[in-house]
Image 1 (tube, helix red, strand yellow):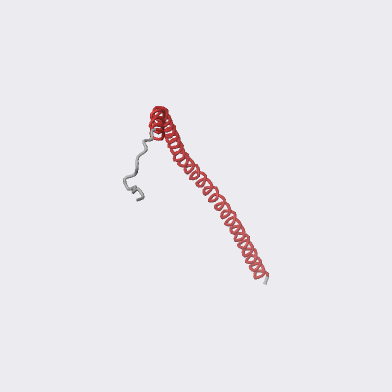
Image 2 (cartoon, rainbow, N blue to C red):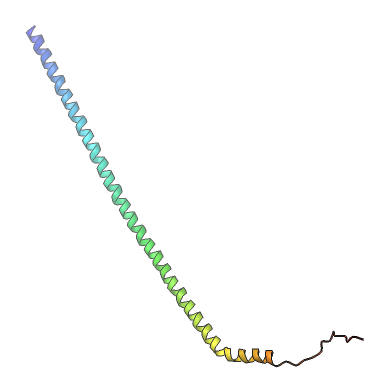
Length: 118
């Protein structure tokens, strides 16, 4: 009888050790899952930052070239305004003379369709 109770005690102790090992393994597994999740989150954040940096670089390159284009357009506009202004100053006197001569030099004539009243 004592050997049976001693055997039962050994079985109970073995069962308790197995439960403890099982609980410990579950804890390690949970800890490892949390650690893996943290590592994955850190890797995702790193990848996201890297991609955002690349995007900002490309955006800067594109916007920078647009800035160059706007500078070119501004320069061309300034040149066109300068050309128009110089053309205006060159031709202003001649146009004023033509306009005044057209307005002031009137030669009265009877219109060809005019019929005198009889």
